[in-house]
Length: 510
Image: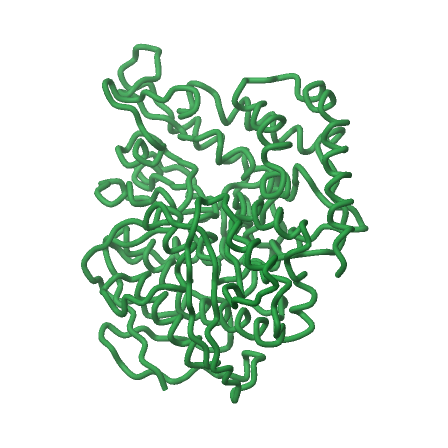
């Protein structure tokens, strides 16, 4: 038996910006985690709850490692990165914050379940993996590192130096990536040449706020009798074409001056840097895909379907009458510069806004009745299919090659991800729902679906600086219309980058 307190807040913490606290709200009545075979019923006060059915977790019940599990990571800048990077150092106890309380509860559950104590050390800037590398080069004699938590690209750089245990070695023990508390799509994507060095699990709290979605101004949907995006998602008819139709119906030059300004209403508000890849990814395309040998391939040259998606993005979905694009015109209100499009959406100036959980704190005081849906796809999806979500990347939970007991480490990682699915993911989803101040089961349903089906693109995750920024992002940023020639001019260089990367992966024995 163990204590479980979940107090839900109106003003709550949201991930990768993880900021804000508030007053308790009515608690949730159902679990929002994956189907693990149990239902948790949160209570408004501290109560006894039945222990989870441990047979679902593959780690034996009698395991007791009696071990200090030491984690190295980088220093955090704010509450966002503190919860993402330093969550396993949370020793605050129950403080009345929905997410912090869930993290603390999860940490204690893991420690008690397998007999460990988390010891976390945070040093250096976000790109600094020197502490991890030093620990490995010392041969592990100082027992300073059992696990490192770093940004994906930086974790990969360490792995390609031969300092990280390949995931397959952990899978020989207790790590089971087929369980529902692991992100299946992402783990399939993260391999190169059948090698993987960190797994995407529910313990990665950067994922919750990291996946992208669309805010919907439901007041405008109802006032103008427009098709309901919730219904379009349910019927599998939520397409890019439908979004453009709704944007066209909603956009209005309210003051009649033929110039779209602060006095008018836009069909959508975007930020170039986070939205264009969403339409590509949720439609089943990738900038870098993998062939039958699990090798990365530059997927843009000659891909007419992907080009069609990009044309809709750069033409219809960025039409100056229909859309407000933050990258192209940062000043929205006279004398005020919007930091993000959510602030604009909160002012009731757009039908849609593309964003992530990072920015939802901007909606705390909005009077807009809004909903949350996934990004739409290029075509209708099939019966029984679910809409996907997209994220730019993840954190790399890397195990040093100095690890003395892979069985123990794999058991700890598996238990960490399992209990995160029971305690932390439901708390995050509930925090988003409670932010609205109302019970919104449809938004809850959409968030659950997107969390189940999140994926990424290696062009963004591993090779952003070499591929995404100079090739893809440049098309949107610089208004390039000659896609084919732009891509072809860079094709040889990109293929060489990928070829070199494969050689680096193949050097690592696994």
